[in-house]
Image (cartoon, rainbow, N blue to C red):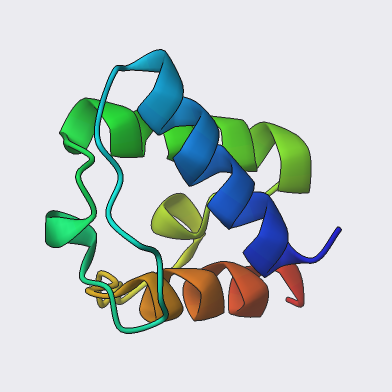
Length: 82
């Protein structure tokens, strides 16, 4: 499974578990308009760390926080290849 597919699957699973209405996920979808709150995002980040063995929020020195889903995916793809 690609990193992008894993991320999207986690967004969908967490939205369902937390009874959130998930926006249509496109690369340009802003995270704040995704339908998920900060708790949901924390769950996703923790699960991605378990799945990928990396947390780019803790490993990057100068973190530019991702704004869109596309940014979020690239953030993880870049961290996974380091």
